[in-house]
Structures are given as structure tokens and as C-alpha cells.
Length: 394
Image 1 (cartoon, helix red, strand yellow):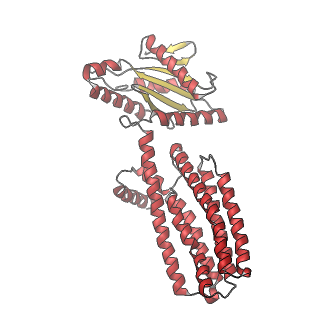
Image 2: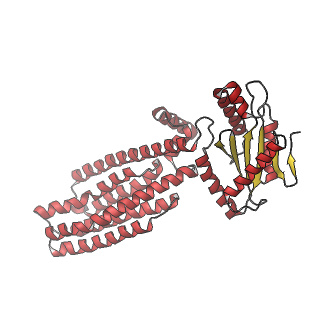
Image 3: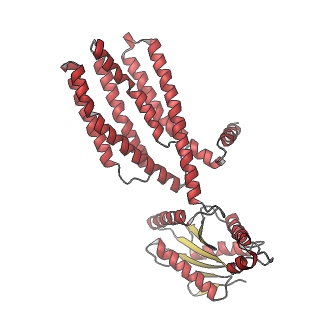
């Protein structure tokens, strides 16, 4: 039953957001399965906007002290001024501490701190001014403090958050309004409170949709940026980022990391003889053939032209060669050329631990060199399976 409802929900959103796949719709709901590139870009954007808002509030919060002093008697404005100075210091601290953060856990913490400061200030100021019987211009200015939760809800709209993340940040703000009402329960104007709470719900809904729209836009941009439009492989730029991340993870964990540099044999002849459309079809067919036989976690990158880079985490060179031989020996192998002959490739394999490389670019260069060795020794073969020998076709 739950699975059926989830499918209906996904299909409904796919019909509305026609440019997004079901997987991408799932990314709008929660961040659990976000790819690392999307997470990194989203975290960077959230933290940068936290810094922007924190800097703005650090500048504007103390300026309102002039209004407090002009509008209220000393017993009212003095505690407010102290609270404003504390809030200003907190905003400045958030601004200074929020630099070069690329992980969502950092973004969550900074965003939570950003909203915790005005939340605490609102509850304190609301409770403080409730002790005084204010009239006229003083009452008008004190009423202005009650609009702070509305401003905070509206501010959520600038952050690209998932549905669950929005709910997690909206709920405390709504709860804050309820607590403020409880504080004034003896003199609470229920119709006014109900109307203001309803308005908060409307603003929360608009902010939620705005945040989801931003996230959807980022997802589409990331998808277009990280994928090669013709083959569906990762682009070289995104592939380099993924490779750098996998290299770091491999070095930290001590697990192997294998690379396979794949270059299609005699590809220029296809373009020269049959045209670029035929060449594109060969490239797409080869990419689909490799994709179809990849193991979970393997990453295929179009490195340039007819060259592909296969990133294989937790894989030794012999294990990589077994997987690549399985791709080459399968029915239709890497596809067919326009003349009906099979598409073959020269492949160079390198592995981080066995080859004692200190950076990912050196590992790529080594796999590239072995690919050229495969070409020079007859093509349609793998070099790098064993330090002493090449894996030629059987």
C-alpha cells in the first residue's frame, strides 16, 4: 500500500515537472540519495546565502537600536538593546565561521544557527514587552516585533531545500508562534492569533514551493553539466571531480581504486568513411554497451572524442580486467560498426595502490600510457592487468 502511494506521488510530480526523471523527483523530496556533485553544489549555495543573510542582519540589527531608544522608555529599550547587541555578535560570528564548506552537514548547522538567533531574540523580546502596558506609537513599534517569524519564514525561500528539509526548518518557526501565543494566553486575541497563524502557513507554503523550485533548477543544471548529452556518460569536468573524490576516499580507507582508459579502435575511419552521424551512433552504442555491464558503483566518463575513462572503486587491477573482459566478450561486445564489424577498444588499466600513485592525475596518465601501449601492440587488448604481461584477446 505504501509503495503504491509512493509510486502515485512520483508519477504525479513527474507529470507536473516534465523535465525531471522519477529519480530527480525523489531528490526533491529528501536528500538521502543525492549524488555527491549535487550535494556539494547545494551545500556551497546554502552556506553562501547563510553568510549573505548573516552579514545583512549583522549590519541591520544594531541600526534598529536608534528606533528602540526613540520609541520606548529606558526600562523597555535597555534589555532590547542588550539583546540586539548579542544577536549582532552571533550573526557576525556565523558570517566569520561559514567559509569553504562543501558538505550538507555543515550547511545544516549554519542554517540552523542562522535561524536560531532570531528565534531566540523573538521569544525574548516578545516575552519582555508583554510585561509593559504600551500605547500609541509604542504599541505600534512593539507590534512590529511580532512580524519577525513572518520574515524568517519568507527568508527560507532563498535556500534550495528538499521537502523534508523545509518541513524540518518550518516546524520550529510555527511552534515558536504557538509558544508566543501561550505566553500571552490570558490576554490573547484568538481571532487575531488565528488569522496571523493562517498567514504564516500560507507564507510557509510559498517558501516551501520557492525552495523546491530552486532545488529543481539546480538539479536540472547539475544534470546538464555533469552528463555528456550524446552518450549519457559523465562529462570530463564532472568526471574529474568524481575521480578526485574517489581518490581521496580510497586513500583514506586504504581500499584499491582502479581506472580503465578506453579508446575505440579505428574510430577516425568510421567518421571519415561513413560520416559523423555514424560515428556518433558508434560512440553511443559503445557507451550503452559498457553502461549495461557496469557493476554497482562503477563510473563511466566520456574523457574526450572516442575516449572513455572507467572509474572502479574498491577494485584491484586483476578484478578490473575480469570485469572489462566480461564487457568485451559479451554478445555484440562494444557494438557494431556501420560495415557490420564489431567495435573494439584498446584499454589501459592502472590502480592506485599497486602503482603507488599519490594523485589522481598521475593515475590517469598511467592508464593513458598503457592504453597507447595496447594500441601499439595490436589494439583490441587490455594492458595493465599484470605488471609483466598484457591481456590480449583470446
